[in-house]
Length: 285
Image 1 (tube, rainbow, N blue to C red):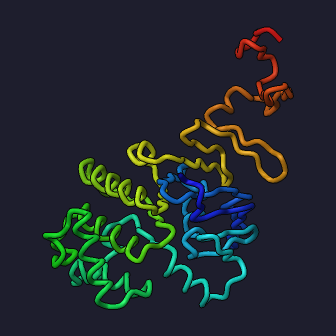
Image 2: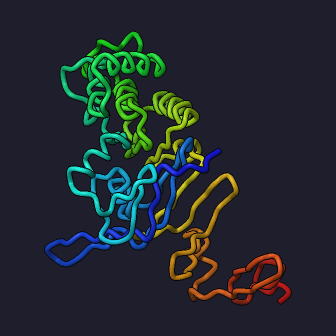
Image 3: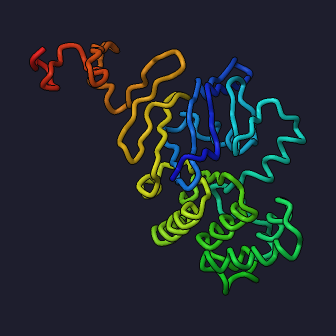
């Protein structure tokens, strides 16, 4: 069951002020991220992926709209309360393996420090760190420093850091971007095992390997949700004003940006003008 939501966004807008004006990075994003699920956030550069991940990770606040983490609204929290919530409920993995780890610190201590930040007692943190590294195939690397680990091993240490202490949500920004195929597949397999234990994992990516490993894919286009793919298929997205976001790959069929909408007993049909019941130009009307 995937009913419990680790994170939810409603009407999220993010506007950045720059010297030349304003940049609308997110435009009314509605999304939810269930526990026990890997969700991929995809889209071209500038589509809003990083902005959405930063807001989900409680590293940034939306300009408008609401966000809930583990059922708790974050919009009106003070800076101190937001940091406390982030430490408890969110794990974060940066794209570059070396950015996640402290130089010169053994892997088990890296993970134990993250556990202590989440409120674990020192002995419990070290014990859980060792168990996690063992689960991730790094039992024989627990005392190795980052410069003694491969990029894939560093990312697995970072994953252990992100999940120790049972946060509700793990955010990973392009986690496979600098990994070879073997290391990427191993990391994704271990993320799958962690998701099966209850963790919600949200990854931004351009990597088709990540998309194929995810149960849900959220596609962003110009700061809005263009489509959502789940085990049920590709879903068009309806925003709060009732506008339907057609998946970008299908827009070629709507060159005039107009559609025929027909209300039928079993649902609603949307088709390009001139397309009939046969589902092609010139079909029966």
